[in-house]
Image (tube, rainbow, N blue to C red; front, side, top):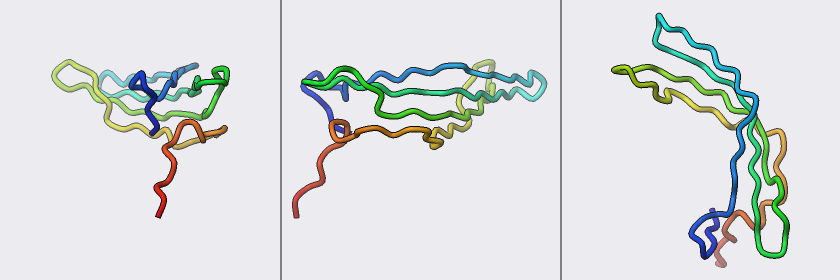
Length: 91
């Protein structure tokens, strides 16, 4: 992951349309949502660089909800990533 002088990759992750199902008796929940990753780099406007879907599972332990599983490997779109990734080292 490339970091800019500000210390970040200059990205914004937007999550939308969550569908959450809670099983109170089992202390478990699932969620499905869509995400878009936008990036702003010098000389280019903010633009989407990736989009996809997340499937999450949660569990309640001692009264607090926490992630039990996260799958965000369902890519619907991967844009230009040359400004997002570090270049490969020369050999």
